[in-house]
Image (tube, rainbow over all chains, first blue to last red; front, side, top):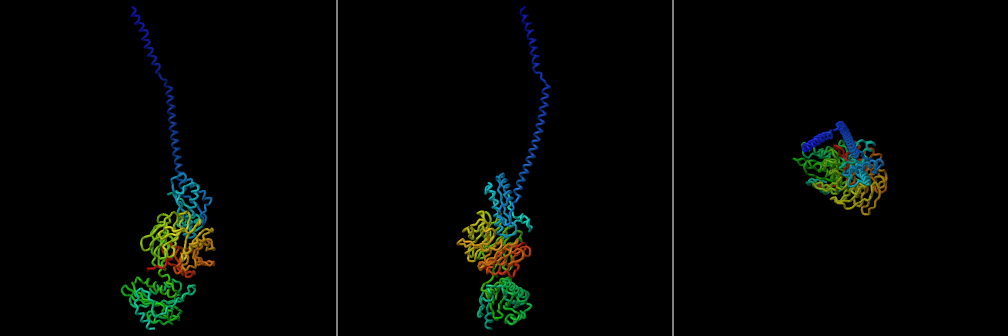
Length: 187
Length: 440
């Protein structure tokens, strides 16, 4: 009699217990899909936005690099193409010449491993040998100025071409003024 | 008189310099050394007598007599009587063996040169005589033997004899002129004979080469060249393929040889300023000559080597200064004009030639050391630069653009008798007269 009662009691407790746990676990695993879908959408949007921003940034960087490259080239061209001029029979640096030399000094600072040759030239008036010496004085003048601005003398070489290498063969004031110059090259 | 002629014909002179016996030397009173170009001596040079016959003899008779006249004319001492005015045919005996002086004095000739030419195979025999027609005497007679190709050499030698007889100086017939020409596309150094014959290219640097200078013995030429990319000083032996280089930083230029020594002055700017230094012929510095910040350039020595003249800007404009080498004392020479450069000290020691620039163009001036004004030798004839004296101090060679492209000209030291020396392709500049060449 009592054995049968324990079995029934056990059954009464176990089976619902089993049922209960089964239904509990089912309940704990059930997800809220509507919320995760939202998060997923948002994540995708953010990723797309990020990609777009990155693309923009990349393009901007390319543009900037291009501009910088251009600027670097321009500064270098300027260094090579902008000569300083002189008065007739003079190696004195005019205020304009000094301004140009300051720009050249800056470029030399920014390009610290570059050596430059300073060529001194004269116009065709005057006599050959004297003009060789005058060209030398012009190149020396420019070199001294640059050294005073901190460029090591070892980076600057001077050479005179006297009246031997005019840029303008004309026989007039304008041509002569162009020929009286110190020209810079990069070694 | 006949004895003299027989003696003379007996002589077989082979390129030698015997004085003719029995004939009094004329003395040196034909050309007034102090004013040599004031009065030109009228001289007659007829065609030479043809002693042999044939085509070559015909040619030589004309070419040799023409060359002799041209060569003597170069000195500026003579005025040549037109052959049309001659009363005598050179092919008759009267013109050669027995001179009738009246035939010549009557047309105004004070000097007469006659010659006879003989051609045999490739050999020539040329006999030449200089007469004083008014004194009716033979001053100099020579007979030369050589190859046909020696014609110029023979004529030059006889001209030396003529000038020696008349002035006591052998003249400039054995000299040459170095100069710069752009004919090859670059400035290179060339050399020609004193009268412009036989120009030949000396340097082949394919770069800018300039500023030639002869040593006193004519064996070396110094010059500046950019052959290695910068203006270096080269010292080159003319006969052997050897030399020296001065390649200091900066310019190495305007060489000027010390008289009769293997030393030269030059402008070097390795101290960051062009200064003048004395160097050995091998290019080593002996001592520094100028100590002045600013341009000091273009040295030229006095003939005794005791002083050096140069261009300096120390008073503000390029002017010529003279420095005593021992004492170092410097005196300014030029005070007229604002740009005086390229000084050249006369071999006679008494004058300085230079180029002075006024209103943008250059002219040649000559100044003495007595404080008197300079004399301008070129006028309104383009740019005239780079004067250089002949070794006897009578002639000046210079560069002129009077015809357009720069050419080499010669004039007397008084600025008379301008004539163009030669015209090559390109532009010719910076002439320098050689000393007398010993072995020509």
